[in-house]
Length: 318
Ligand SMILES: C[S@@+](CC[C@H](N)C(=O)[O-])C[C@H]1O[C@@H](n2cnc3c(N)ncnc32)[C@H](O)[C@@H]1O
Image 1 (cartoon, rainbow, N blue to C red):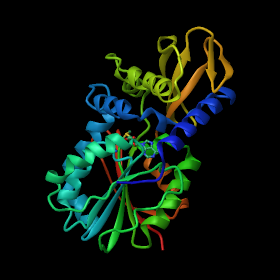
Image 2 (spheres, rainbow, N blue to C red):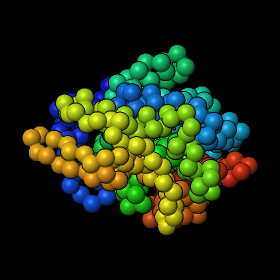
Image 3 (cartoon, rainbow, N blue to C red):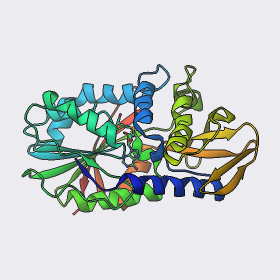
Image 4 (spheres, rainbow, N blue to C red):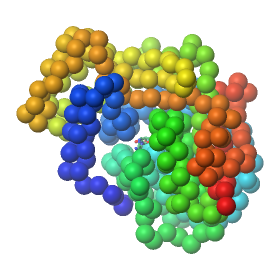
């Protein structure tokens, strides 16, 4: 499995991300840090929750439209997936494609990716699978030796692109335009803006799984950075904002907190929070405009009957 970072790089980066979060206004930390092995497992549990509509809605869109999606993509395509996780949505897509050339699953969660890939061999028969551990928010490269193919399809389901700012999403789309080439296509799942009555329970379920997923960031930091953050001193909160439409997840200090990181002491006052994830909610038109600025032309779109989620196919503009 190709990897772009060592464990020491990762620990140093996490420590820097925490210090930045403690010292900068807004106390934001990249949602990528939510995904250690346990975080990835908890995310899979979230996808099964009754209130978490995005996964089952997107899977429904794929199931209902698989033949037309596969036809629109065409033959001999190399599929490059960003934030592949369990690859659950990709297996049916790869099996429906006519002579796909290979599959490059990319994820930051190295152990989880290794496990997911080991389970793919039987499901994908003889299809070459070339996994890559990388952070897609950086200028990553594809693995050096790839099977022969006539075109490349970027696949980015799960509305994970919504975790990036508009500027971050545009820069990722531009970088992928270069990686996927002139014949490139991009199939992207986006979560559509809707009532907070539906959105909030999706990110704050009564079962408490999303709260455990969010708090696992602190567990991850305690383990990786040998800290002693009191996990119970932070409450999970999901907040809906407009302009731009988004859900934010926070870990709110329920009492004043003092944290010692690399010998330095930092404070977080009661009521202040780590901002751990943003999930932008788009309209099809709004996202298509953003993608166009990065060189991608919307060709097809598929949605569910309640217009909760959309799967969009783009072509690289020449
Ligand atoms: C919301 S989950 C989606 C998983 C899967 N694609 C799906 O649709 O169910 C996000 C996935 O992206 C990965 N991820 C998050 N941030 C990442 C980053 N910056 N670089 C690479 N992978 C990332 C996580 O480890 C996780 O597997």
